[in-house]
Image (cartoon, rainbow, N blue to C red; front, side, top):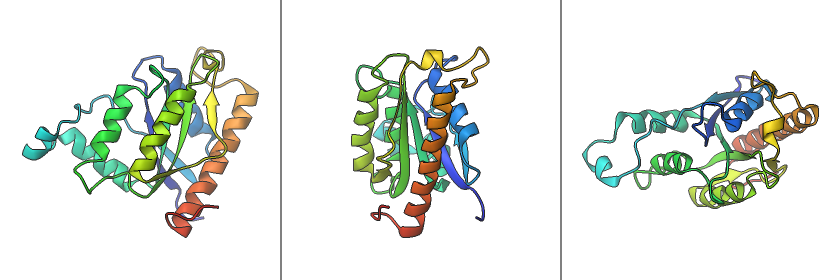
Length: 193
């Protein structure tokens, strides 16, 4: 294969000791060589406000949009807040979807990993996010699904994923995602394997 596919990773938690950040780092380590994961920070993005767009989009919006536009695919790693995605992640999605008609999300392959210490494993956030991705024309990988519960017990004190079963599952998830991206980019949007 030629160069690795560029995958933007958006982490929906800003907490310093975030389980989702730890998971994003673990996914980067478990990804096959044909994928290059890049965590793109979203906490600094001003809240989307169309009035700001009319004057001159904030530089942080421009940089974010340009970075996502260059990517081959996008991976969302999110906790669940009140049965949905955190505001910071929703804001990043909104910023990338504007101005109208110039969404940076359009026709990109994507995947979702939801992470929680709870048993439901952020199921609500995962599925709520899928609704937005459908509208944005991000073709989200359907199988395998990744709901990671009990995440507070999967990492050591240094933030390294130490649970072998989780490592195996997530490695197979990332291999499936690599195949999903390759199929999507080689076959074109709308063609599924």
